[in-house]
Image (cartoon, rainbow, N blue to C red; front, side, top):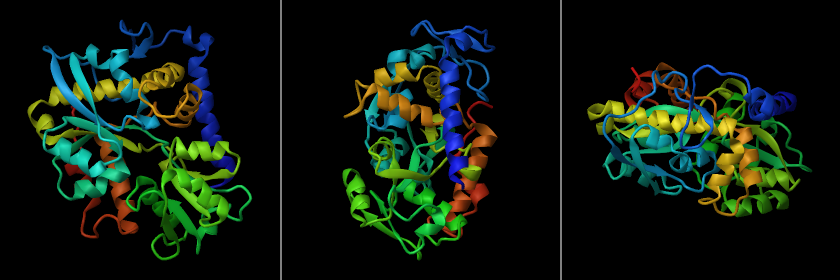
Length: 355
């Protein structure tokens, strides 16, 4: 994808966020907005596709597994303090599982946590192993970046043939996604590229020394590397047919979906409301996130949120279609088993809790 197209996408996202925050635009009437008594702001009461606003008849306690340090999950992390769960009569306890996807999914599947939020491209291979977890929504896109050295000779995906790429984990969602993208651009990610492991804080050093010609990962690490002026954005997961796909998803224990579908729907709706709120009030979300984040600033979190598509949500058939796309693509790069049927697998692991 051309640099112009990629930057245009980022600029459009930033312009949209600025427009939503404009006092003039905020003064205009909006359809479907309801007063939020807990925050004093107007927020969408019914995210697109989720039907009527859901408030449970009786209070329900739930445990939600998250990575409290992930900037892209800032809307979910601060949702409790902003009252999004309480509006639905939910008492949600956040359980920090960090980056351990396998532990997180096992916790959900075994009932130690009722739900969690994480990256689809990290979860799908694990879900193929049979965890009893259902995906109820895609929350947003834009978490992943692929960078090259500003003064290097890698300017396109095709330039990476025969080169080395630094990653923090061989099963990471960024490695999975950019493997897919490389494959589509004629570079075999298994045979034409060498993937090298580094701690996140050493990726920039490896790139600068020429040990690798590109690095991939998620924010805030990738955002910070760009800000140093030594790295440039080669690609993201907001390009081509992926521009409007979710990268993070809500996963709920299968038992909760089967036995208490309305509870699963209320939780999912609250999470999506929090993401919608972050589009309108990124500064408020960034400020609230500082109580949980490590080594970040309000300005940094706000800038990163502007780069993500927190106003895009996939539920129901749309979510199943997005997951089918990912599963099909992961088969081409030898992550998902050849014998897995993408459509049937996507139907099996997604649940339309709003129907």
